Length: 294
Ligand SMILES: Cc1cc2nc3c(=O)[nH]c(=O)nc-3n(C[C@H](O)[C@H](O)[C@H](O)COP(=O)(O)OP(=O)(O)OC[C@H]3O[C@@H](n4cnc5c(N)ncnc54)[C@H](O)[C@@H]3O)c2cc1C
Image 1: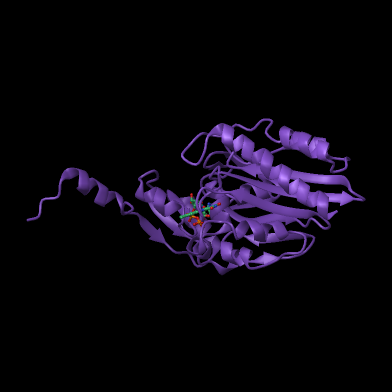
Image 2: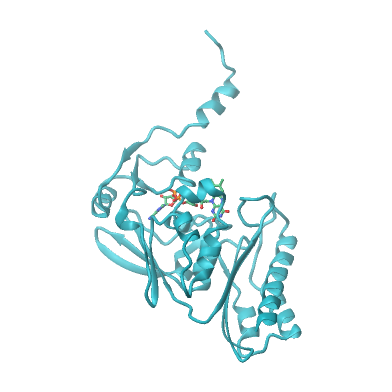
């Protein structure tokens, strides 16, 4: 018999998720019934959940696999854009939505091709990684989350939905069904992120949407990812910009103000100080480009 040292055996065991029951519902209704009865976790693309199971961070009794539910995979266009929770990153990355171009830009920057082919917007949003791309975009755009359970439906604003690192406003038995985003007609929009390596999570990322009228800022939405416990809406910078022209001085003051209230971590991707500098530079250069185009 081959004797495997205990240390290696432990590593080999950890490469696999623990034993877990698996249920593949045929409808959202069936999924909600199961979630009401059992101690279960929703599985969508598995890009974040499976690694967490392997690391034994989570140990649910059952997984309810909603990844194949066609009724949750759609993009509906109107004054409000409605996106089903199991819509995959690649579908958003390959579709230009008028008045919501920023979403395509953000989706195309999530991980790599493999991740985008399997991962879903709902999974990313419910996972609420502080460095994920969509939460900043959805916070800047004042998106609404439609949440369903056996008891009914409720709506939560993005600002209230993201409660902290890996924590969202979802109760046991609830599923994120849809994300609703108002169309931003006439806004210039951009999502930019700085990464240490291609395909990585953001060291810092910026979601920016701005409406100009004769060079004057009529409305502006700014949110960052990777610089706080969750998405950071830069309200102070928005205040500096609103009703002003994009002059050098205004841009500089807005960039400085963007870090107000941010509390970036220091980790292997970069120090807290470096992230604050990246925030300022991301906003400054993005605004300079927009000022030159106007
Ligand atoms: C190598 C790699 C690189 C990555 N890079 C990036 C990146 O650059 N930027 C980025 O933003 N993300 C990145 N990700 C994460 C990726 O976007 C995942 O796809 C996403 O975080 C989770 O989506 P999923 O569909 O795989 O969800 P899952 O892993 O299936 O689920 C994630 C969590 O959400 C819950 N959940 C899923 N769907 C629902 C729902 N509808 N209602 C309620 N709860 C739900 C699950 O129970 C679980 O807790 C990366 C992942 C990998 C593996």
